[in-house]
Image 1 (cartoon, rainbow, N blue to C red):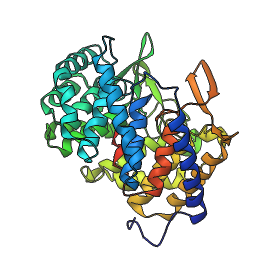
Image 2 (spheres, rainbow, N blue to C red):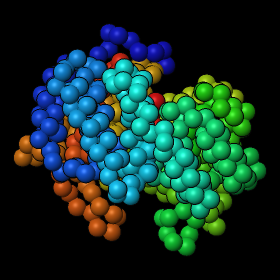
Image 3 (tube, rainbow, N blue to C red):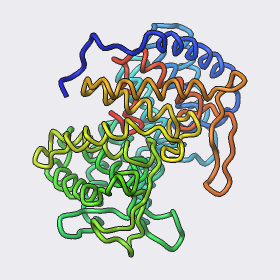
Length: 407
């Protein structure tokens, strides 16, 4: 792990293919009308706004900047309407607020643009508090998602409230700290090992707070206990075909001796998100050898290509090939390891191959009712594919991925 060697570049043929794909995706997003009225970051217009802002930052393209301002106008209209608005990070106002703060930070829009949210911050706080009280901690759809907006905005008093609550409701078992995930089943509480909804995502949030010295000692203590819960449940890879489980019912949990589970290979669940989290915590928990554990894990899963094991059948960021490619790409940037670059290239080519009839099709719907269809959003659609392609072509412009727990 020597750091990125500038002589080792992404395959030139792949770069040219990505440039062509990116232009086609840009045109598709420009023509898309399916998200009209949907303001969400992961699900709607805010995600498109973020893409065109990144496009502007990479090219100074006036058309892209104009589209950012068009989105700001549509958001203002949504705020002025009398409709009850979703406040979540994934599909509602908290995610929109995060995007605005990001655009201000990058000097894409005027700082005064963020003032529109000042008068509703107390509404956000009330909803965040309500979600905390009912156990909806989720870092995407729940209380921590709203706290991530406050973190970006610098409203640290609201963030402190969330950290204190996480400390109060943690489940302590020997050296482990865990948090219950509700909602997968009406009558069952789970321990969730996925980045998107579980312990790794909580660790990411706490790391962001720690870096800003918000309740730093508490954050460090909670991170160590949470990381130990992850490490204590590493599975035998040859038997389970993955290092970490997905979810374990809280009443059935036995640290280190749970029934093996095979996790998918994805951003949302599975080894990649967990190892990425562990790698990002290595510098503040050096005694746990997290950098070696995570690096060795990535070197092993870079070999996984069998669809029966990876379960990679669509191109999206959340649970598809482009999300996997992006994580390998980021790990290559961090380590300079050629094998991780090759893995990123492989999954980028696989993403391009999934295009059919000049369009990407995405796996959508619930686990009980899933189907392939075109989607244009950030998390599960073509906007996410475009964002990754743009980032591969502009590796100095990846800070946007903070919204996906990847910074």
